[in-house]
Length: 161
Image (cartoon, rainbow, N blue to C red; front, side, top):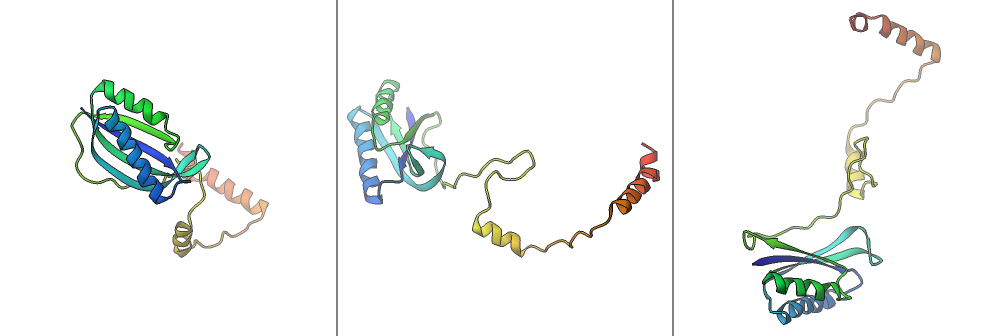
């Protein structure tokens, strides 16, 4: 059966060290009797939360052909590696998927008000500054506000309700 192993390597390793760590993960798989079909470095991405004191991690995706018993041993060995912050193994029931993957940074979920929980990036701020600005709101006194509210409440639209 084909399994997909996604590993996160902390950002404190250089690109050359990451290649060596990918080689170590491949060696662990082959030592247990699994065959690595494909290995892909997906790049460095900002993590949603710090993992082992790292805010960024390099994602490595590998497709491994192995039995269930072998993949359990591989998971245990990868879990014990100091160089791997997190990993996830998933069975690919339809075989190895075709195509390439593109990783994007984490985007915070929407708050109940419909806004992002984090602040805007520099490019988003520049885009919003270029947007047309609405006319300034005119200030009115409390008596004028009360008068307008009375007009609204006495209007035909509200009286039908």
